Amino acid sequence: METVARHARSEGVSEATISRTLSGLTPNPRVIELDTAQPGRSNTPPPMSGYLSRHLGSSIISRGRAKYQGLASILPGIERRYGVPASVLFAIWGHETNYGGYTGNFDTARSLATLAWEGRRRELFEGELIALMKMIDRGVPASTLKGSWAGAIGNPQFLPSVYLRLATDGDGNGTIDIFNSSADTLASIARYFQDAGWRPGRPWGVRASLPSGFSPERYETKLEAPTCDRVHARHSQWMPVSQWKALGVQPQSALGDDVLASLFQPDGPGTPAYLLTGNYRVILQYNCSNYYALSVGLLADEIAR
Image (cartoon, rainbow, N blue to C red; front, side, top):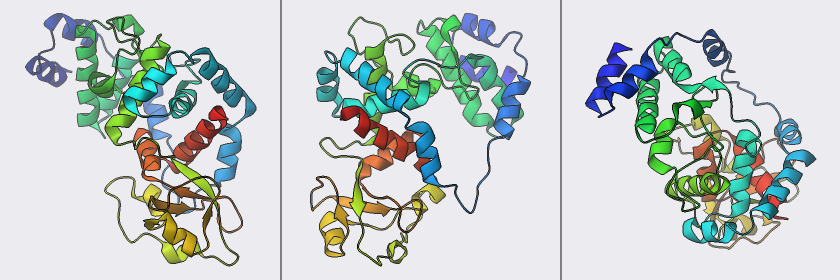
């Protein structure tokens, strides 16, 4: 931790915060266990349908709708400011922490120090540990800094560096509290999406019907994504919706003919297919998993019904 302390000092963290945060830290074996137990890459992704059935149950939908209605008075202002539909914000919140029901109980400083000490992504987690100390210097109580084993905190499960960059005072009370304030939580998620390039007035994607005998494989992407290559490789080439329609692919909801879209049929022939817009890729920036992004999009649609 001496290296972390030195770097923290060079970035302006106070000596008192460095001492209080780093003194007595020991590796957390459970964090290492969870980190090393993460599934590796599989050549055959598991079916999407099973994941969706587990993550789109009636409980998470009904809780999301109830939260949406209960906070209806603050939502128009957030939507106007950031251009992101409230239903999408609630879907993220629901997936991350069950609308604040469980935000994690791992000591965040210890988790980040453990992951830095473990060494595979040392630079990343040392940086997040320093960001955590900057949060404390800004007045965030150290006692509130508990979260996931991987260092994500608060209702939106932001890493400390994301908090510093994008967390927002959504209720105008002069403080930023993504741990207890619904307004701050929703505004912070909205600001994240705005920063990531969300296009207002455009859906994340829509269900699509395919003509008999249509082969999506003919339209596989030829491009390599700079990150999360296997996630993006499952999407087709990007073409205007008008071109998809000319091929017999019909969006089941409104989608402008000039919108660029990618075809995604995760479970193969005869299963649900979707035309994705660039906003789907914004969801992927929050968590680069097709399982996550598609379930967030579908949950948002259900909450908005």
